[in-house]
Image 1 (cartoon, rainbow, N blue to C red):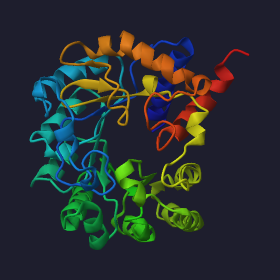
Image 2: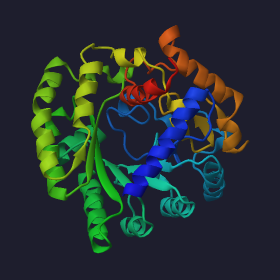
Image 3: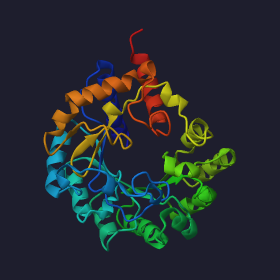
Image 4: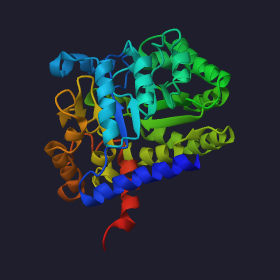
Length: 375
């Protein structure tokens, strides 16, 4: 554990030096690999597949070469490129459901064999027989199941389908398989995107986490689109949540379940209460550091800086090596604009000053950099 913490700090240090030098010395710490954009659910709050959006992203996005699903050969080639720039973690997540890919278990094995920390973010409802065992056997590092509910009723309200038993059954099977092995991997987390459709289930979620014996729960405030503005939390919701967060945190601490409730409280105070459009005063005052820390690669190979910045296309791994994309002119220009945001007042994408969920991360990086800057 001590060795992994030292390695993590070294990884962060290289990125901080890159920011100070205004050029990337190494690659991103984490790459979100979207091996498919297909999803079986249309959750109410989702910006990619939500039923309130009219059409899913797969029908409104152009795919380079018509590639809507990433091949195993592409994953293998990409892993070699990511190793070249010292990426630490590859996360299967993004605008689609990773388990909709027919070879998801093989993809995890490829990533692990290449030496990366591997995470999977899934809704858990498409798991085929044997998948839970395969993920445990492959030594998957982290599994995040996006439950967004603690009951069948609220789950159906969010997803539009009765999939509660599939989702919770998958979580239980992974935990059982993990206990039957060495009891360590994968680190098991559930995530919960808060909106008016599920705010009533928050305290029940604490009960569920403690009952299941999870390692972690991550909370986030719903993003913003015009179609989902009515699902934003109102002032009463926020006041209630801020009142219950301390005791929820105490219960999770007592059960040894990690959580981000203090961060959630910060985000609730920052981003909610300006219906119908959220406001993010913290991010207005900060640069965005994603150009050094993070990258997203779509199923067609398109590289973008983060999930909301879908229109900022920085290259394609099917046309050039990721190393060349990362060090290319388009990425340099994106980094320049990102650092200049507080001075110019111009966001790099429409979500920066509204519902960006990276503001707290950017503030933390900004604090780390402060003592390193010349005075």
